[in-house]
Image (cartoon, rainbow, N blue to C red):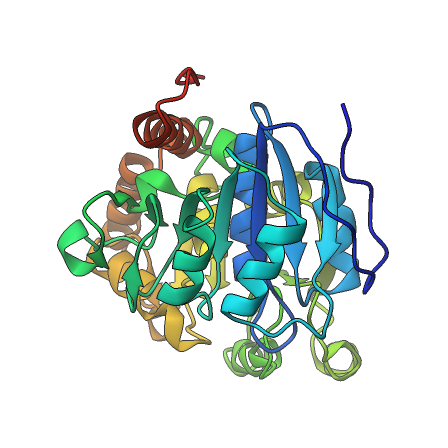
Length: 361
């Protein structure tokens, strides 16, 4: 089978010839916008990789993430800087990277309605990953796992189908597996997990560590830094001077992340994908919002008594904890990958009249 080779950063390819069972994933990430779009796309790529060959297309991504992408996807390509963001980019991608019958997945706030039309107008099956419901969608499928949304909250075409809420959580397999074998116990070692995503641009990690020091925290604090975190020198200096009970991790793989989470019955996390990851493992979750786009997940988690405001640290009753653990087990069942695959295959079959079989794992 002729296939796309790994392309050197910044080089422009000729039109690529591939198998018709190819999925293109388009997302960006860096120290300013974080890595959430990339993380969700990679989770979806992992879900689909059993049935499709996945190609990752990006404009901006930390080099440290490339190994993660290459471990899941068949190819990685960076869009040249002279191609403008918008419909020009969509047209360029259509010319160089796509062939009839392929699925195209978008995750990013700058992929507006015109961009979607430019992709779908080339007769490609379009899936959009969303967390804001802030534009008109022409996609065949919209996935928004934030919680609290319904189809009526979206402006979309009549053909658009929706995968909404945590039952469609876009997580990698180790976290989904963890939900099926939870081991929540108050007798665990009383470690605290602190992780504020892939970037933490304002260095809120340091701010929270100072807060924990002011509370005279005796528990061991396990801090996980993301691949786009830029404040490590400042953080390490503070830890060495003031918090000898901190253990530092950086850019760890999902299976290691699950292992660390299992050691921490308490976590301080942003209301983002990592909160969903932790809730699949199970524990007492305190939320610290670091971006406006996290408000919907935060509202959902608090309203459904799955997590708590950070100012509730040290103030919870045993009843509060037991209710949260019960709700986590009820809502996060580890079966989201099966639902997503089924919905995508049904959508492709419906709109393309293909012979793709629905996969029931």
